[in-house]
Length: 289
Image (cartoon, rainbow, N blue to C red; front, side, top):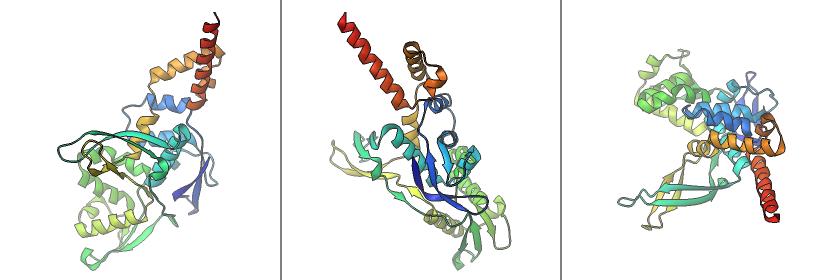
């Protein structure tokens, strides 16, 4: 299926590619996910999308390096579309009520269409920002955060958010006035106001997916805003226990005499359809006797 990116991929020649051809998840990708449970989420997303993206615009032969260069919002968008292709648009999840003295488990049921997507079509790789006089009045050029930034900073983010934010700016800021590119020490010397203005402009220009939704607790009747992490939810849902996957391969190979390669090349949906057909046929034969 072909999807239009909310942001867009800027190639080395400056051309913007905004359409991606996405292939459905198959057994090989599931096996990869099952064997990398301790891998940081951004690294998993790169590995998964690089297996499923067949083309970005007019660019064929998509590599992990190209997937890393996709904007964060575009990667989340494609991950959500891959989930739709695997399970459909309906999502069922369990969250906790955030009302004081409640904390009850709340079942939520919604469609992926209800997750807001903020589109921000890209015109170029680099953006310019004139800081306010209060922030030093510097002229800043920068690019938007991408998957490679996520991969490099995921562990640091868990231990020191402020330092991770400085590292992100050091990676994304291309120049400050005549200094090109500024070192981490140069970023650290910026005022809090300057950093905030750069981060706000990055946020304004970047494509993004909604990360929260309104819910009502059936226990206390209170309304609350529930956080919904698309990346965490979809990766957990797509994950398959290796033991279960191997059992499915064995079951189909035993009855149909297909090779492991043929079975792992199937989508999960097709694999389980054949298992259902087999189970129904075996039940019919048992009743016949």
